[in-house]
Image (tube, rainbow, N blue to C red; front, side):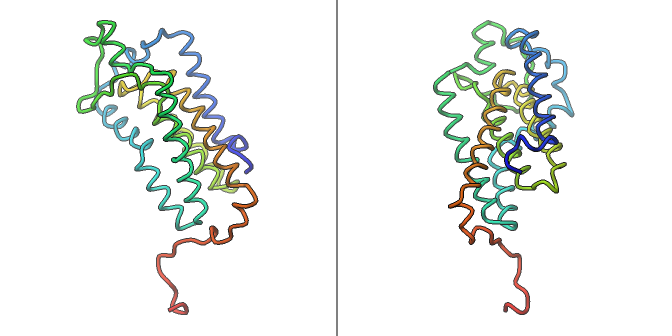
Length: 224
């Protein structure tokens, strides 16, 4: 595939996620999406979303990167590149816009007491809400994994896209981000995927034949 847009199995769910989010942004007042989820913050949803949110963190990158080493070195490097682009980009944008986190927003509105939170989850505070780094990282990573899997395994794009969307939803559920944060994070993440994949298609990168090697679990008897 030339880019992530060519995989409809990934992009259709991603576009549905984004368009549904836009509709909610239009009809739901800012911050109310968090309050609407108050009635759902109980088990097993609390534990499920606490786990899902981890899939947008460095652990997921490490697992996918190590797995890619046993396929091709270039794929592992592309996953690393996605992470290296995502991290400074999201921090720079957060610093520029300086949007308050949900709990800070509700505290300033004297509405903190009506927010139901998930037990055991440390709430981030301060002006670091926009955009969602977890959502950006998830869409960037799982978009790249979709491209790595290629055309023959393009249907994996569906669960990977849904997984990325669930990471975004988890950030709202856990009272860490607003809806607009995760929607912009999703767009930025796909942009990172596109940029990293384009870099991987450049001639000088393609001509590095050693990148097509891979780690082997063991050597055959003839190689010993």
